[in-house]
Image 1 (spheres, one colour):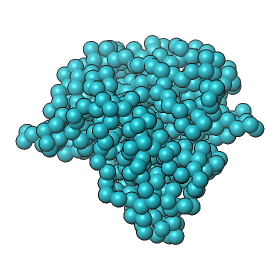
Image 2 (tube, rainbow, N blue to C red):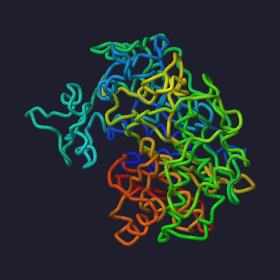
Image 3 (cartoon, rainbow, N blue to C red):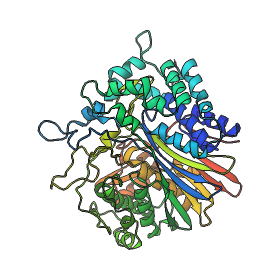
Image 4 (cartoon, rainbow, N blue to C red):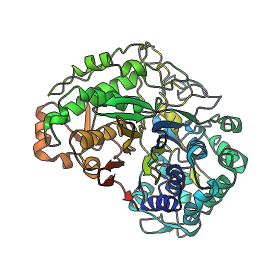
Length: 531
């Protein structure tokens, strides 16, 4: 079974699986197609996190394909001449926003470990679509017509404008032969086909246009994806695994453990108290995340302290049946003195889940960061603006250092938190994840509660209303909550306001006694397919 954000991508996954390919083989094919048909969300120029379940060994492996800051990056590179952060749209569209791309290198590492088919055979679906053309989807058409700085930029306008001077619309056929050529290089040479040679040189040249960044060919040649054990904690009767920081996995695990201390499982999706409990757990989690989460290879991150039973028990006492004032960050064991991070983290991300015939499964979130990344386009794809996920200011108003400040070789903090759930015998139970910028953690939390606490199907759980609670903001879908539940939430201090986050794009698979059951978020264009 596979579930991904565009039917063409899911179909590519099924082709690979039918040919005997592994889940990772299928993920390579999915990424290649999504980078073409959903360029607003992910691509060859972006990064990713993957949580992989090895069915034979019953172990979870985490792959980190997050971009890295170049050797020439400095803590003040996003500050203007007066020492204040430059306007965010300027930072995003500058060359300084682009880090060394990691998604393809990460997939190559994972495919070397768990692939079954030849690497070069995994790009044929995307190559054919790029050469012959694909039908522009309504979501992509909406992004093309948007007023975002990247969509209005010269590169996007050139790519998305037809010969008659009009923009591509839903239903039009768009060809991208340059993308097909880049894929052929990657198919033949592996990640070097992207990070070096003419494609790598084009990336570096584009980064150095206008407000230039410092990315070099040496930075890209030095890029290495990371592989580690999954970050796994017991929860309910399960084991929940995510990638470790700088992914958002530890924060998701913190929120799950906080809710485990409440009675949310005895409630349900129509109970306002249940949603208040979820909102309060989110607010506590986000407060901690904003202060402590960063790249643990560069700065200390108190992951163990944040997930420790004693700390969770104390923080959970702050969760009541009404919403109070915005919570302050806690002081977990091992916590360094840190300033608060005000990163905006806009969304432009996608997710996939795949399980193969051998029972191996993966959950992968992949992104170019903002919509169309930095808006800079080379060789058929957009470059990422991932470095604006760092704090633009290296210190807070009190002068305390921000954990997520820019540093050479550092990976920016992420909310991406692809999930694998196991039973106590470490057998596969479920995989899920979502795009959504910082709201990713909330979306994943909602789906986990829906499936495992409220007994919903995977499709019902991903379709639940979204509620993102951070500080004094409660953002969500009032139309899905309905007037009665919205009024009950407001009476308990949770006034839900519409449209403050990127929509979710949840995908999930769960193993039931009767077989596999999948879900794809109705807010986007994805589908679940199986055979």
